Length: 166
Image (cartoon, rainbow, N blue to C red):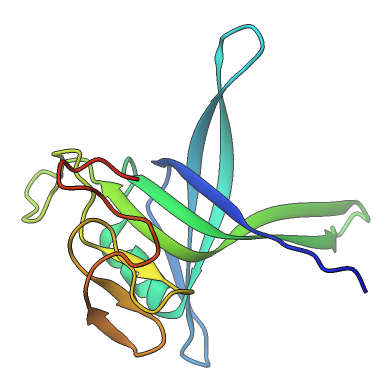
């Protein structure tokens, strides 16, 4: 059997506030759209739009902190869904199931304590793969322990002393 690998990493601007839904089981799901710019052959900038899905604790954090206009770094896997409409047409959609995310900055929010616009990555992050993850010098969410905090970014996503992501 051939081995395969499905991983995508994106950095872009959030295009919609999170839409959050809670299921009867207690599981929470949040979805957003994210715009990622790229160049083209003629030098024009093009924009690709991605649907992002957050589950569980990541969904709670996304619903609380992510807003339209924020710069976000995510990694996860691409997943497709196929269905047939009522008129018999076959449809397919693609979305990114987010396993890690780091808020790179936030647009200043009027009337909100905690608006952030200095360009330095925030100390809010979610790491679903490494033990403790986070953006910048603060901690992040440790999915294995169910706790928030920690020693900062251990998965390579963070910043140096000058606030420059690496």
